[in-house]
Image 1: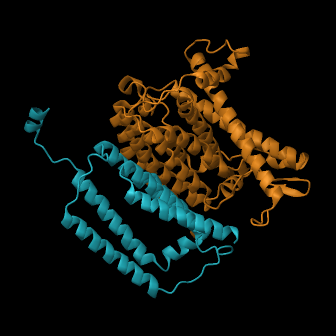
Image 2: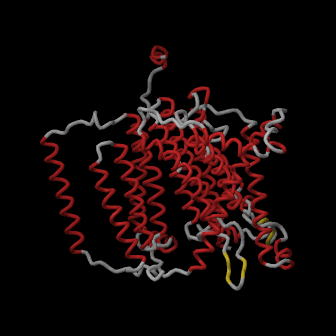
Image 3: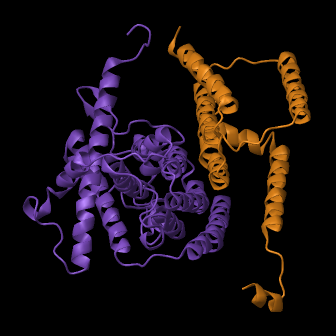
Length: 175
Length: 356
């Protein structure tokens, strides 16, 4: 057992364990912290595969920005274990069915996929220069389309978040 | 060890380097608290600390001792584990960034090349960014776990301020990175070798002045120092996110802020002011042995860092605090568009010079 496999098993146990912690802990703040831990474990896996860029971007975007917003919402709404809403039977059933379907799809996708082994020690496939070249040549179209998707989501958020126009006469009354 | 086939000398070298850097940043942060008081005293025509030791130089030690011996209070209704985790995270993220900083050029000692950088990873600047974006957790979790409305408000302010200014900071850096073409801190420093080359300055400050101003403003906001110290706005929030903290836990929060100031001064010096490079360094390198040359370079970097720290202090004691809506307006409506324009102009200039 060399250092790579030790790290791999450690990170895998950490990822699975903290992912279980996300869904099993009663307190939403604990769930968020377990989720952050999961992201760190996944970033560790990226580093083992020598994909440093993906690892650090995973940390910056998910752990550093999105989870902060999650915490924000949870703190402002003051969600606790005592006020957790109890779900009805139908909703639980729907959750089980949709989750199981997703699991099946992923399982099918993984069993039919051809897996290529990566030489973890010498491969520089995940380094930033290679990633940039691939992203702007081979995958240029999907990359641009996904950026348009982000742009439309951003504009949508601005439109929803915009204050409704109030005439000046009514404004004075509100103030 | 058979299991982990690692060079023992390499491990010892790195352990020594990490200890020196850690102790150095703690020491600088310690004396930054003293310097802050002295600077504020000079600017307000007072004397400042002068009781403990000559010029009050032992004041930081006395403060630390006082904090350690104070009674430790953990509020009854707080979330205990997260309450303790808060200051730990603040300290951890404050000290982590120093790992990718190149503190000086390599030198040879007894036949082996010793690098004055803990880890030369090829995404160094992104690592700094990742750690900065994690830095907000210490404040946020601490403020929430205190179970105090003022602390919660303050931590939410801190988090939204950090997220808003991170964007402008990132975009201003993109312009810089387009010019350097590398994310490694070591490469960025080597490109700024010396001071003058090919009829222009080598330091990035002269190539990216707008980017520098945006980056500097954003680092004031990220450090939550005046004029952006809204999370600690005492006239509105009593004390801020560390209101319920006492003893050394409070000390950790305050201390982490000074370590952050030291590290961000180091990052600014490295990115924009040539890091450990200084004018006429080639002549100096020819004249002295490599070990001493490395020491001189480290000295040059430290001088730049001290200059930056003093600048941070002058600004704090000169400018009044922003209002919260002004802060958000500056971040979203001025700095981000400015950074975007800067990025576009830089890209255009690079494209034009490439064609020739």
